[in-house]
Image (cartoon, rainbow, N blue to C red):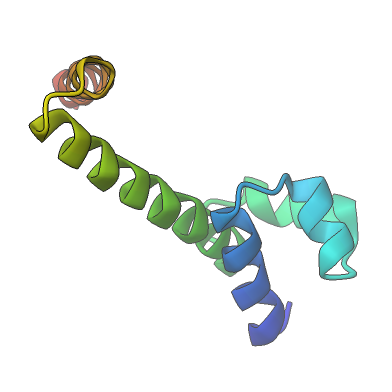
Length: 92
C-alpha cells in the first residue's frame, strides 16, 4: 500500500468507516486490507488504529470537559473508562 493510501486509511478510520468501506473508498482489495489489519505490526494496522484512536482521544477529551462541567452522563462514561483502564492494568 502506498503512503497516500495509508494516509487515507488513517483518515477514514478516524471517521469510523469499516474496513470494507475503507477498501471501497481507496479502491483496494477488501480481503487484502483485512489481511493487513490482522497483522498488528503492519503499516496498515498502525494507520487504521492511529486514525481510530485519535478520534476516540478527541471524544474523551470532550467527555472530560463535560464531566468537569457537571454532566452526569459524562461522569458515568468516564467512571466506566477508569474501571476499564484499571482492569487492563491489573492484567499486565
